[in-house]
Amino acid sequence: MDYLTRYTSDGLAPIDNNVLERDIRPFCTGRKSWLFSHTVAGAKASAVIYSLVLTCRACGVDPYAWLRHALTELPQRAPDADIEDLLPFNCTAQKNLPAENSG
Image (cartoon, rainbow, N blue to C red):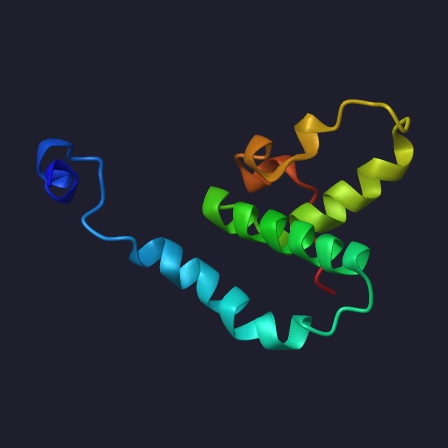
């Protein structure tokens, strides 16, 4: 039963997992729509994009700005190039991303 009281000994441990449940809610409600992916590869691609967008949100990075940046940078790199710097958690501040032209 120690695991039920762990949050009392560690101030960084959350008392509940509401943040995670809120993040997976859209996935659970969209699951029925995604049931009809035409291929396994298409379903995997959707899962990867969804995971990256949620990672952006968790890191405080605007998903749209990050996608624009990553999809602009990827074609300019060699197929075997290291792309770790393009991952959302490595774009810790939105100031690293190009500004979006709004008009």
